[in-house]
Length: 438
Image 1 (cartoon, rainbow, N blue to C red):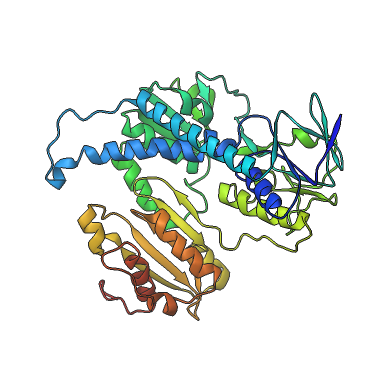
Image 2 (cartoon, one colour):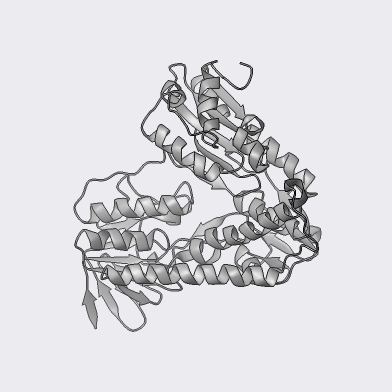
């Protein structure tokens, strides 16, 4: 039996469920098809679980230095089994929250694996769904290395590591990107001997050079070995190897369609529409930046256009945060990228050590950097330090609205606060710094 909808969405991750909600808000009759759990890889196996673990291990790291705050405590320890239990409860609660939202918005959620049969029909095992508009949001999956398969024991994916309460004595991490660095911090805090292997000349590609240099010093301090420019092979394995060398788009559901591609990804225009009219694609299927917040915004764009709107998406002001300790965050061009693109630029940097709030909180490591053109238009902001994930929000607003460093420098911030550092970095770019020597 075939059921008809205005929009059928494949995939209930941070792109798919947001797409469904926005389309329903616009009056569409929506069907959301999900083969596993709503929330997708981000909520169930990635962003949220890793941050839940990092919250525990970061607190544990700080607790071990508690005497610096005039507090005495003995026998401080961490139970990783309970940490995993806490993570599971958080994920379960958030999944239930999404299910509640979908239900309240009148969205029909079907659990099962859908395949797009034709331009307007999606097939499941026991039914067919028809819709004039289809939005693909099936995400991506971890990829392995040539000649190596994930086996859940020796060679594991991040999914495997997130569900195992056992702390390995040694852990190899293949891939020095965001996922690899997150797990390096988690397990080094737990006492694991960690080695990172990265085939590229440097870890954290695309991140500000000074931020990388600082994080590498911190990794050394944490006794994490970093080996760059090395292609990992089986014989290098210590016995427990996490492979996080990238993700591949899940294209199985569209194997019957002849959609235009760009490399491994699907091609879409700025309205998120594929080469077949009425079929849209979002998130890891298409994205140049595989972030949950990118998938969500692309989903809003696709939903509005599927309902007759005229919304476009671009990658100009996409912020990111890496939850190391201290955190890394950035938006816009790095200093190196700006120099390569424009030649003459202005850079202002302010150290956390000069921030009163950082000294009071005991989090003095890091800096805030503002990159601008010769006319003081802000091109990028890059942060290493406490609360970087919060501060970068203000920077993203500044970039999105084409603000100048003058405007940022003349915006009064509360004292004492971490955003003061953003104002001070803007002042530094204008040679007007008040708390460091210009």
